[in-house]
Length: 261
Ligand SMILES: Cc1cc2nc3c(=O)[nH]c(=O)nc-3n(C[C@H](O)[C@H](O)[C@H](O)COP(=O)(O)OP(=O)(O)OC[C@H]3O[C@@H](n4cnc5c(N)ncnc54)[C@H](O)[C@@H]3O)c2cc1C
Image (cartoon, rainbow, N blue to C red):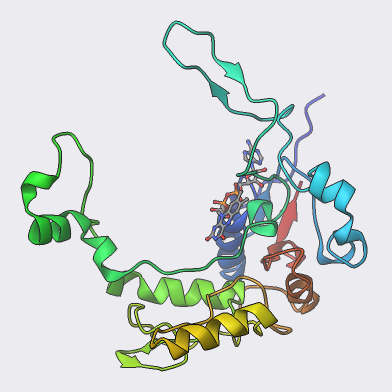
């Protein structure tokens, strides 16, 4: 028999980064939200605690955090005459389901685009001539600029607790960061991850050659952090710092106006 739930102001379907951030912002405005998520519910404890999270068989081999191809998959065919067949085993880019979704097992790379990427077509035309773009190639300029998006990158980095070192702070070049990056309005919320031994050797060798090594912006928390959009549960980023879960999960589901199913 169909079950009827009480009405809410907003229904957000799926609770990955997008749904979670959206839900958090709407809940902060006082709206009541229902977020149906087709995968498992997850919480920092016990889903990401040591030693369970380093269970290689469960996560590395049986892909506990990943979408099961028996549940959702992609189909592929090599020509219009072939019957499309489902992938039974996904290879390297493994999507997820469940609260946090791909955000709980992403690689945590958090690069911002370069300014030029917003006007790629114009850049190519100005630099190499319009003739180098073949007819039908869909290369485009964006309709927005880096400057317009910058506050949102800044906000996301604070939501996600990104570790890194600024290299261009409002146009001022900072030696230990990435001097090639587009200007940022503030520092990363967390200091860069400490160098491993081999990374430190690489840094020294690159520096000696007159190059500009810098720590990459990482979604792995370098220390305990309570992200802007998260509940008062610092353990969320402790899970990130473990390295097994390269992400911080915004946790709107701890707010009173929020229900997941
Ligand atoms: C292996 C891997 C590595 C990655 N590495 C990086 C990285 O280093 N840096 C980076 O910036 N990005 C990375 N990404 C990409 C990034 O993780 C994703 O872009 C991001 O997590 C997507 O978030 P999302 O909320 O838009 O979608 P998703 O995370 O896909 O969330 C969608 C949610 O909706 C649910 N859902 C779907 N349909 C329904 C339905 N009908 N009913 C209920 N629920 C539903 C799903 O179960 C899922 O939980 C990586 C992704 C993968 C898979």
